[in-house]
Amino acid sequence: MAIVRQILQTKGYDVYSVPPEATILDALKLMERRGIGAVLVMSGDKVHGIFSERDYARRGVLKGCDVKTQIDEVMTKTVYYVSPAESIEECMAQMADKKIRHLPVVEDGKVVGVISIGDVVNIMIANQKSLISGLENYILGRDYNQ
View 1 (tube, rainbow, N blue to C red):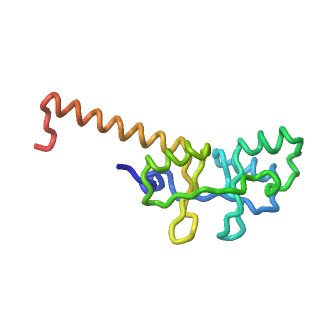
View 2: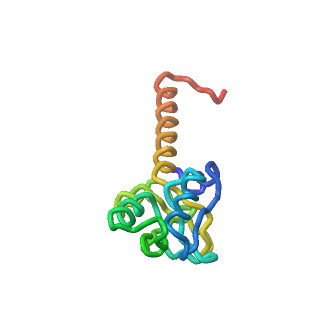
View 3: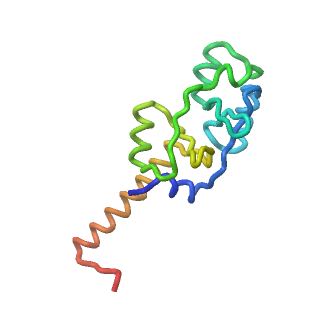
């Protein structure tokens, strides 16, 4: 069973954030520059919230906020976390249950990375391909360990 740590070892431990007083535009520029769909809203190591493309659409544009609006006015304040030892299946269940697409990864009280639904799906697909290959080899009687 795959765990969150495996995703972070592949994608990296980068954590992108903006301070609560940053503007929507500041966050969007960072997200575009890094090719990501969400940023954490942080002061030092303290997480205040998370801001995603979905937040921009639903709480920014649809509510008439302009890009100079402070991020803490439109961010999602409830943030769910996972540990590096959490299983991918548990992450998928949490994302589906909470209807979220990003999970910060916390170890020893510190954010050490962020995983997305895309990361989780990709590793699940890779695991399924490996399982299928192993089953095909078993059925065909191939043994590559000799």
